[in-house]
Amino acid sequence: MKKIIFLSIIPMLLLLSCDESFLQEKSKSFLSSENLYINTEGFEAALASLYYNLREDRNGEDAFPAFFTGTDVAYSVFSHNSVVPFQNYGDAITPDIYPVKFWWDRSYKTISWANKIIEEAENPDVEWTSADDKKRIIGEAKFFRAYYHNLLTTLYGDVPIADKFYSEPKLDFVRSPQKTILEFVRDDLKYTAENLPADEPEIGKLTKWAALHLLSEVYLHLGEYANAETAALQIINSGKFQLMTQRFGVNAAKEGDVFSDLFLEGNQNRTNGNLESIFVIQQEYGVTGGKTVGTYGGDWSRRVFVGYYQSVKGLLITDSLGGRGVGRTRPLTSWVKSYEANDIRASKFNLRKHYFYNDSKNVPVGHRLGDMVPYTTALDSQRNIYPSTRKWDFGAQSRGGDALYLGSDKDRMKYRLAETYLFLAEAQYLQSKKSEAATTLNIIRARSGASQISAAKVDMDFILDERSRELFSEEDRLLTLHRTGKFLERTRKLNWQVADKIRDKHALWPIPQTAIDSNLGAELGQNEGY
Image (cartoon, rainbow, N blue to C red):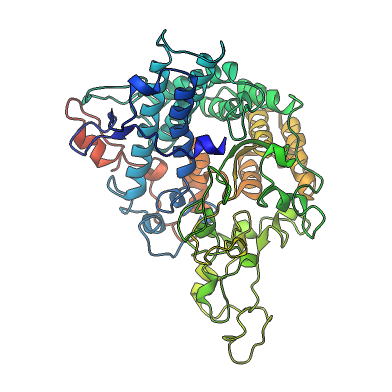
């Protein structure tokens, strides 16, 4: 599958220039409908552009840190346009800032490509390899259309539904109510779940289980809690997945724990023995379809979440310290302290709390090689050597690469069963099934070594706390907080940096000004307060 997903020659439907419609796409590549959408192979190539875009959502640092910085789990002191607005809030969140524009444009671009595939698949002259190909291809495209519509409405609220491909500029889009959008997303995902296979045809390909996973989340957003429970249970009871509770994979015989095993390079896919993974984004280092040795590229989660430790005298960039981080986003101390003493999710294999001098030529006076590095400045605790997740550790040096390599080129679990259990617990709680919710949460907590909880402990805040303990830096936290309506409350309560800067309007992002200005034929409107 990696050879398919990495094909970047397929972005055949590029965004129009800025004076054309913000939702409009045109085919500008040498690939066209006439020579691409003629058989199954051509449609697979077109689908590669959708997988590619999803992977690229984190292959660059400028947009995705906004999903973490300035929330209830993380803050930042880094001076960069990807995070500065979310350090300040107030009037710093505007319709013109980069993340606001990026996620709007990226989402509608991918939706447009998906719409093109869906429409072309209806051509009766297409030569399908098998009878099921048409519905499967449409199902995959509808997943991406649903995914990005869901992202859009969760961030911005009421947005236009793009349910067709426009070959000519359309300048009169109107916004649909969030409930209508979510129902559209729900229906796309139901189609996908019904028409995608239960087993991956190739590593990294979508299955019905990925669709059901996202569908469970969408049902929660719609308030269809019984349906959310049913969708989650379909995955859990399928017999295809299990929480990993025993050591496995590449370092199973070495020091570590089962939670750290999940995130070691080479352990993400089911073919690696990981039966917890539901959907894995493929970008393995140095293989066909992945990335190559160099200084740029790959998943930048490591760069964002690993500290800028190399700026401290006596510390060198090494693979053992996670590779090259720059400390874009630091976890809040309240998150670090939320783990119980026996919780392996905060073990030294999963949370790096201390650093030790490793540069023999530059150890500060009064210290020796191997001594623990103390905090000497505010930046040390806020950006350089703060406690950091080890989920994204990746070093290029041991592969013959440059120590300054920016990204992380190990495969990334987009969906895993632990989150499915968390969706289930949320659905149960919201149906007043607190005992069942506690039982579900205890399945996750038992794997981590945390204490078992009673039904009396279960509420939405506890569920969100458990999500952060299990999924920190994996889930797009801002989307979770927007979906649950808890962003304002929890961020004001837990994030010291922005507690007095958050305003009610920040419950949604503003509509990008470029989108408003380009929609000449209708009033797109702006969210309240912007």
